Length: 96
Image 1 (cartoon, rainbow, N blue to C red):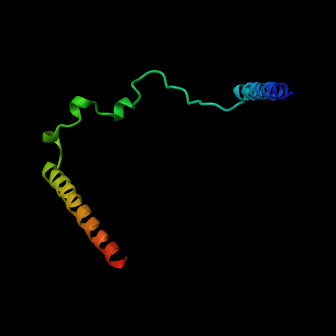
Image 2: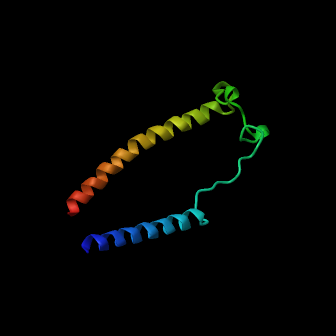
C-alpha cells in the first residue's frame, strides 16, 4: 500500500516537472542580444586612430605640460590614498 502511494506521488511529480519544463522552454524568457553590425571593424574609421599612430609621444602637442601633469597626478594619488587610509583607520580606532 505504501509503495503504491509512493509510486503515485512519484508519477505525479514527474508529470508536474514535465509540464513545467515544457512551459518554461516555450515561454518568452531567454537570453538575447542585439544584432551584430556587419562590415567595418567595430569602430568609426575616420574618428579612430589606429595603433601604430596611437602613442606617438614625441608628436604630442604640449608634451612637457601633459606628461608633467600625468606624472604629478599619478604620484599624488599614490601618496594621498595611503595617507588618507592611515588617517581614516586611526580615527576609526580612536572613536571605537
